[in-house]
Length: 314
Image 1 (cartoon, rainbow, N blue to C red):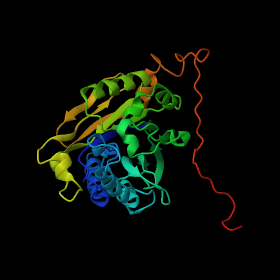
Image 2: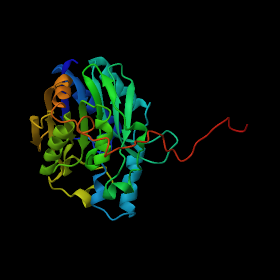
Image 3: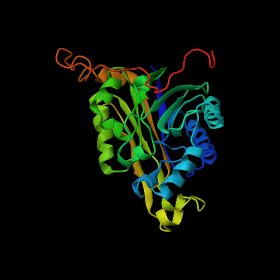
Image 4: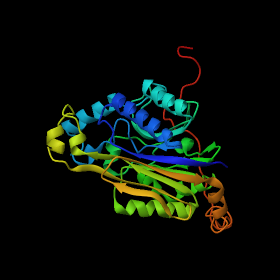
């Protein structure tokens, strides 16, 4: 396995503006690549922003509906111009790019909290839709299924990951450990001090490198044209998310960060051979997993509610 530099991009999205956020992201990919990064990771739902208002408003009220309509309009459809721009950034820099998006299907009416992985050729290599929306998030996002709970092989190890509080699902983590993930991506909106402990626990439990990255955005970053902006966020300089991003090694050691309350790109070197060797001491789904006692069955099937066969009108 090659040793490579990875980057965790802690930044503020351009709130509810898909194209401007993608343009900013592409510039940050360029910046990270100039520092030698071969893998660049962005936060949860970065494009066009995490729907922070779900924690501030009463469900089903008019204001929540108008904000949802804006989010839906600005969501990403895989294969659209936004995806092409992100792919172009990955391609011109010869790097892998993981970025959180609010995603919808071209003919669908459900939004998903999805993390896209684009390869050095600019193609979408993978997409993970969050399996379990937490609390009020369920008013905005649908849930994914097991079809994208998979890893992707690279020259510097196997990539995989979970989003935000999915990482508190022990069986979901085990599903990734069982696929021998070496570099574990953990984008989030959780700015708490405890989150760093979560990243360190996952790293040592799975003997993986963990890249934990969050947005860093103030109320003052919310544009004036956002519906009900002053009512919801006021004129103060309070934080929606403070960041607290970090990169952790397979022994639980913090390699970069945590950093909070500022936009920053964190860098660290990862060595998949080191991660794999460390599993000699502890392998949660291998020699220490006790398959005679514990077994996990993962269903990779797609769970689309409507399936079409044959030709229309046939």
